[in-house]
Length: 488
Image (cartoon, rainbow, N blue to C red; front, side, top):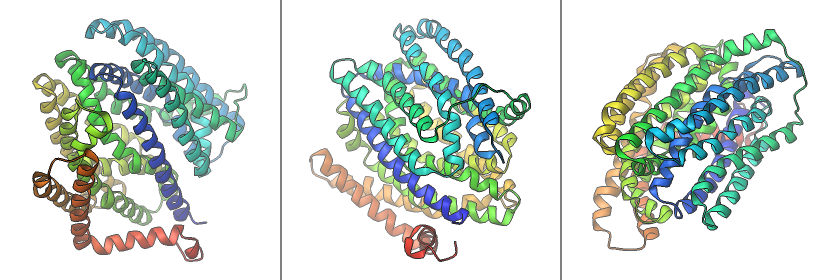
């Protein structure tokens, strides 16, 4: 099986897994949110941002090292495991010690025990990195798929049990810990991996040299969330954090359904093309089309149905979150391009460029958060869209540099799907919504979604028919059993 075919199958399988996995996770979250208040959602969201930052410092780069390294042996994988453990333990202790300070600063005592509970996921992730990296390295996406779905179900079962018995706040916290614990156990069982008591100092130095830029990049990705949520919590209260978190959760669902699987699948693919710029350019073009053509219209449709969707999913009281999500959906082009930038640069070994890009992004993101959050959550969200436009240009420039092509090349690919998205939003939000009679949220959602989706699909077909056809044929040739014998 060709590399392109493996990557395409892996992408489709990962997308299918992500769809089921994230839908289950979203449904569980929606049910639990019905039993909590915006303030409690905000408390957990604040703690989760700090845990994500700690995870980025402790984890990033080591799994990629497993996938990227030319050869592996038990001594090398053991070194990577123990390196992860040596980093994670002090980071977890530091995070737990931060709890009382954060609780004092935001005048929310519950932040201390919440942060302590969530910090347990750091040590559980130690048992995930190497076996999960081995599965991805071997392109064994089926067990990854199954374990991902099962871990979501286990975490969901724990969360729903606690929520139904009156512990909604703790349900949100323990859901993550239970899911990570099950995934860790599952990956170790599937790969039959257990680290030996060995440590290669040479591999340790090489792994740290490789991982540090990625750790720094991921930490920089997580840092703006910490600054933003803390600033909003301090200036506007944790209830505003909860409203913003629900809006972000809707946006993240869109990303996780299609975008995130591509990063995992295409790192080894781009690595294999690091010495062939022509193949790299062709793959970049295909991946951007595969994401932009469906994803940008999907964001537009989701923005149109945000109102009935939030009422249906989370119950009353979240209209502010729906409006915030509509604004956040304007960042969809950045989501597409930045998702391709990360695996492309990592795959061809330009981890330094990744770090410099994230350093630039964190500076402007933190500046926007500190400058705009005192004026309200809407001011912050609108300012973040302006920041996203600057980040989009920076990502496109790095992609062009990596593939020896013009900066405008990836940006030009976004024009047709962006036009289709704008048309779909206008059709649903301005031409259909004002004339709909009062009806059940499900019917409203279906009517608005169908109208905006139909308009977006029609405009996309008119503007990018040849690209849609090429994308479908590429997927068919690489996945369809009837086309196995055809060249990829």
